[in-house]
Each structure stands twice: as C-alpha cells, then as structure tokens.
Amino acid sequence: MANRPTTSAFDFTASRSPSIDEFASKVGLMLITWACLLAFVKKICQAVARRFCSYPVPISTASIPSKLPHPNPQGSAVPFDIPLMQATDDQIGAFMKFRGNTTWPDEKVHRDIALRQVAQAAAEYKGLLYEERTMKWIDDHFRLRLPKLKYPYVDRHWNGWSSFWIETGEHIRNMFLSSAAVLFEHCINGLFLPVGYLVTHNDIYLNVCLYSEVGYMTYATILIFLSYVYNKDVTVEQMHRSVWPLLLGHHISSLIHRSSSKRSNMLCAACSAWTDKLLTLPWTDP
Image (cartoon, rainbow, N blue to C red):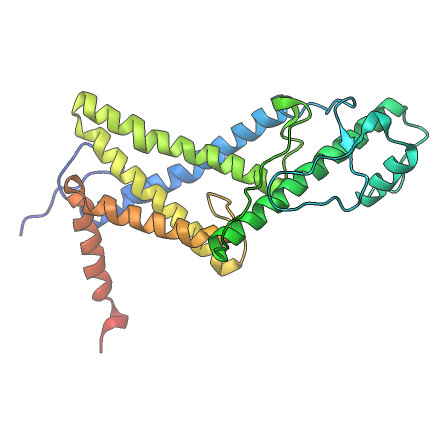
C-alpha cells in the first residue's frame, strides 16, 4: 500500500481524510491555541473592567443596612435602608465591624475618605448578597429542580456601569469574564470562519473551523473532568457545579455533531483510526 501523503499541523488546506498523527497534531494545536486565547481574552476583559467599571462609589448614592446580616430572600434584592449620608457613627461602626473592619473610624483618616471606605464595603456586601441569591437559584433550578422559583434580579447599581465591578461578587465576576471569553470563541468558530467559507468557498475556512471547534470542545471537556477529579472549579465557563453535567453533555454532543456532519468525515475517519489503534495496544490482549 502506498504511503499516504502527510501534511504539517499548520496546513489546513487539504480536505482529504487525515492520518492519525495529522488529526492529533491539528486538534492539539487548536486546543493549545484556545487555552491561550481564552486566558488572554479574560485578562483583557478584566483589565477593562478594572479600568472603566471600578470607580469609587459616590457617598451620596451609597447605603448601608440597618439589620445585620441583611435579609436576602429569593427574588428581587432588598435595598439597604440607611443612606450613608444620613447614617450615624454607631450604625456605620456596627456595619464595618460586621464586615470585618474593627478599626473604623480611624482618627487619622479624613471623614470623606473614611466614608468612601464604607461605601466600598457596602458595595462589596451588596454584590456578595446578589451572588448568594444567584448561586442558590442556580442550584435550586438545575440540581434540585424546585418549581416556581423567583429569579434573583440584581439591585439598582449605585453608580451605573462606572462602579458595577465593585458591586459584583467574585464568582459572578468569574462568570462574567468566562462568558466574554466563550462569546469570543462563538464568534470565531460560529460566525467568522463559517461566513468566510460561505463567501469565499475556500475549504481552509471550513477545515480550520472544524478543527478549532473540536479543539475547543476537547479543552472545555477536559477541564470539566478535572474539576470533578480535584473538586475545584477550573472549567472554562466558571458556572455553578450544578450546571457542570449540562455543560458536559453540551460539549460531548457538540463533538459528536461535528464528527458526524457530512463535511467532517475526515475527523470521523481519524477518530476511528485512533480507536482501532487503542484496541490493539498490549493491555487489550487476552
């Protein structure tokens, strides 16, 4: 049998069925590419949020709660009921002590600066309460499947987009950044590359799109499995654990769909060859 011509991992022009090594190298290349791209996009979005959406919360619009801990029922947020400008020192001191600051007020700090610290702490607590409601809603909806749940609507931001990052909990921030990264991937693999193929009819767009999608889904699937193994969220999406099974089903189904489409028989052939090779390894001998 004549030897099959081979191409490099960087050659996506050929539409024939690839060899095992070609398939593995191309998918591996895309996996590494997406691991780097997703991390880069997250860093960029985080830098933008810190630069443009993390301005100090105005003292005039901030509030603190009178009851500690603040009521946090499911559904819409319960607004803090004491405007910061009208709060007494005892009320502010009790709130700051509740938030772990036992040194307020610091006599060496100007009162306006001290009140800005209180506004910052109140905004962070506000974001924490929203995060707790959201995480509980996700768990109740996807894992416990409870009926008639009230959606956890976010409270009005005290300074619009300018300070919304301060009013956002850490987990919600991670979800926000991850959603931006996944949106970037969807735009590349689900829009730009397919449109490029439809406009030019050049197979390189389709080939790159298929390998890119398989590489990304493989990467995302591996991270979900690792999250289960180490009991730590290292997923691309950074969603609640209750959503992991749905994400896993989505990623595996996407891999099967890409491999079963008419124009991706080359991926199917390579997968089949990999399976045949695994079945002939020494540990499968009787």
